[in-house]
Length: 111
Length: 113
Image (cartoon, rainbow over all chains, first blue to last red; front, side):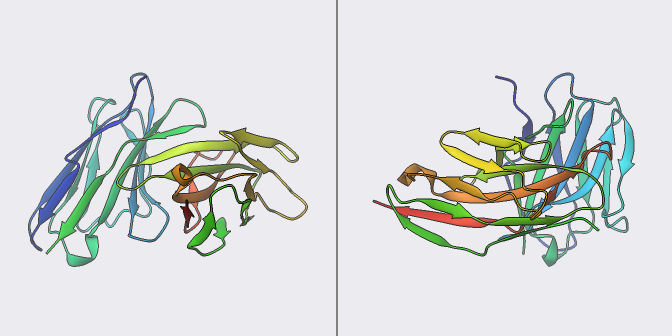
């Protein structure tokens, strides 16, 4: 069964460092989402892509976060510089119609 | 804006007990409703969904009915198992509006043998 792949699964970094997360959606899924899930809370959308175009990045802190999906397939989310408050699970999801399939997530710890 | 409110956890039950997790929503448009489950250290898995009023979603013994009159989508299971221990998220997406999911805060379920 096709799955959304994410790497790394875990990342520990010091504040002010740069980090990057990678997501490979299910083949053929045009829509890709990045969510941030703070411990004990529900996920919140950071950015949504349709193919290579950004559809919604209204909740993305653009002073430090960036996201790209250059060829409309896999995607990278970057944080530079990381802050203590960025510690969270970063989830990627993809969809073909209205059902989203989630990857296992990247757990980020900022020290 | 759109929002989802779930009962706070943790919910602790004995095996074979009846489960209800309450979920209510507010939406600016016509929503589809979902329940997701998250096991420790894993991503979210879709448990069930309903796309219009009075629809009942069901999967693995779990059920939820889309109640437009009470703006609710409560999750139920007649007999829980230890393996059902997880965090459950209620969510909505507004049809024809980009399919962005709005999640509730999650409810942790702990089932004891």
